[in-house]
Every structure is written in structure tokens, then in C-alpha cells.
Length: 188
Length: 188
Image (cartoon, rainbow over all chains, first blue to last red):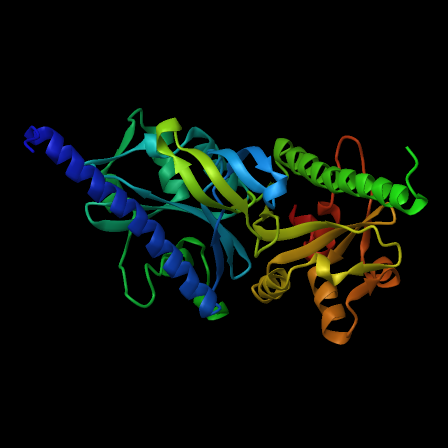
């Protein structure tokens, strides 16, 4: 079939995008499993919230009608060295800036709350085939000091910590959490 | 209609039980909302995990077949004064002992994990029309030193902290978390 070039390109882009989204989630899940196995930290993905409309009790409580709802907090949270940790993983296809529309207003409010209550909160952003950990306060600082609807890649490169993917350890983002959490390594 | 006495009693019991289960969850949710509104703590109920089998994408991603799955962690977690908090709320109709079958083996393992990683973890047990906060280490200590399949009410009364229900503040369990978390009140 002959699709116009633009449609073909969009289609191709969407496939890559979907795979990437899945990949990032898988990579984070693998990393968290590694942490759990090695007894380094307890970090879990929260279940996707679902609004249940209809349940068939005669079929062992089978759900027959429901819909996906929006998480008002971030997707991952847990415990590392007594500290509360929460984060989300976000993908963007844009090469020049990270659209703030990727983060729901409820989630932005929640990030502010976690910071105020002395939790560790951050985003893991996958962009330009790189992974960056952007600390919550740096994310909020950008929003509070800019009118822009997206964060330029330059800002993410300057304030974010690049994360390397390793086959056995996954993204090992806790290395940077040690930095941003102000942990003294001698305490370990 | 004339039901035999036993069936009537069972039926009545189940109604009360179901209401109580709902009540306890509602009370905890109200308490957490109070904490959120007053900016005291950020504590949320995790969404119930659901295994999605069939999604209709033509109907805006409506879920047409799914089932309720078991939480391997506890139902509530969050952040209080920089600390990680996790707990579950459990009802029992028994007046003499709390059956350990109320807590899934995965959850018991998770409670041990949270303790080892210096998080605050506990159960809120509704029993004999009272609410008790049983600290994780006291719960695990019972399991490790007893062969019994239920915790006697005497143990819960001795080691648990009684929680009072207050119309505006709910159960206000954080008062006891201040004690078990070893917080110095001057830090507040």
C-alpha cells in the first residue's frame, strides 16, 4: 500500500514510542526487582487505579465493566534507608524539550507536597535515547520560574543526572538518590 | 419467613461484618484526608490491583474482563515527617483472638522487609468494637515466638495502642506513630 510519507512516518513513530514506553516501565521494574532481591530498597509500582462499574459475583467476582483512571500521585514509591521515595518515569519523543503536559497538574501538586514533607521525589525522563533523573526541586523550580509549557533539553542536561542502563542492575537510580537525599555514605 | 435461628444469626453477623469492613476503610480514608487537608502527612490507599484480561479499544479503552488480584504489600502507605509509613487495616469478628489468616504470607514478609529498611509499619485492628494500632515489630515478635494461628486479644490489648475515633480527626493514628517512630517532639 502507498501511504503518504507523513502518515507512514507518524505510524512508525508511534510504534517506537509505544515500545519505548513499555521498555522504560520494564527497565524500572527490573531495577526495582534487583533492589528487592539484593535487599537494597523496597520500591514498587502502584497498581493502575481502575474504576469498577460492574462485577459478576456469580463468576467469582469477575469484573465485567471498568475503566482506567488517572493516578493523582506518582507511579512508583517505596522505602530506601528509612526514607520515603517517590518517582515517575516519563518518555518524550521530542528532541528539544520535555512537554509539561506529560505531568498531570495533580501530580505536580503532589510533587510539591512530597518535597514539603521531606520525602525524596524525582522524575526519570527518557529523552534523546538517554535517561535522566531530574530531582523534584529542580523540576518545580523550573515551573515556578518559567512561563514555558516545556522544559528545554538544555535544562534537563544541566540539572538532571544521566542514568546508565546496565544489564544486571537496570538503571540503578539509587546511586543518585544517595546524592540528592543527602545521605552520608559512612552511614551505610 | 422463619429461618432457623442459626442462619438468621449468621446472616445478621455477615451484614455487620461487611458494614464494619467498609466502615473501617472509610474511617481510615477520612483520617488520611484530614491529614492531607491539614498538611500533616501524605498517606494514600494503594489502588486495588486488578488483572486486566480484555480491553475494548473502540469503546475508549473500556475494560470488559478483569479480576481482583491480591496486594502483596499493605494497603496504605505514605510520608510523615520525612519517614516512610505503611500499614493495613484489619477487622475481625472474633472476640478472643485475631486470626493470622487475615494477613497474607506475602504481607508478613513485606512487614519484615519494611522493619529491616527502617520504615514505620503497623496494623490497625478493629476488634471488640475497639481500634488498636499494633506496631510491626510487636506483630512479628508474636509470630516468631508462637506456634499459634491467631493472636490472643490479651496480647493485642497489652502491646497495641488503643485508637479513639473522633468525628473531625478520624482515628488520628499518627499520635502513636510519633511514639513508635521515635520522633522527638521538639523537632516538630
